[in-house]
Length: 221
Image (cartoon, rainbow, N blue to C red):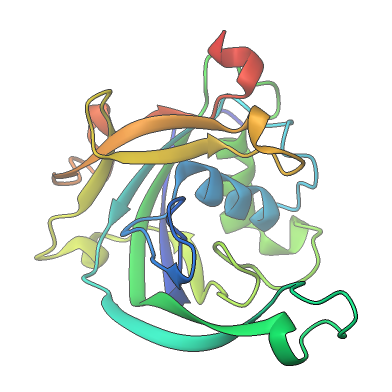
């Protein structure tokens, strides 16, 4: 099945995308990083090996104006080795920002260096025949508790009266976001600079400047 591109609608009631600079106050980014969206799509199609679709290209647009909320949660730490974890000085309160009512348009298209099958093909197949997907667990965007409420093809009525805010690659942009995350250490994490830009969905597809390839460290050399 040859698929040039597919545009998805993603709804997440509660989400948080921690800023790399955040410490005690867990500030959220206004938009999910490409690496986070890529991981969600791999999970949605039942792919455990994230290397399989490296090179795929994504475009991420925010359709809603999510409300910013704050929650107090308990963070565990090791301050006193003689005290159990999460007890006494080995816990502290953290303030975390949450985005409430996040809705996204996510474009997926084959990348020049992506293997076969393409991620766009598998996403399209999952929409056409959900029963063909073998996966486990809840589908989340970011933290495991931030579950996706709806993932489907974007419909024309989803963007009536809406001008999405797109994540656009820009070397001089103010947002440094990961397109690939090293889960063992930070050395293999790949960052790119982005800016936010308003733009319509022409013929149901994202603007040409919003596409970003999911690159591994070796791809950057």
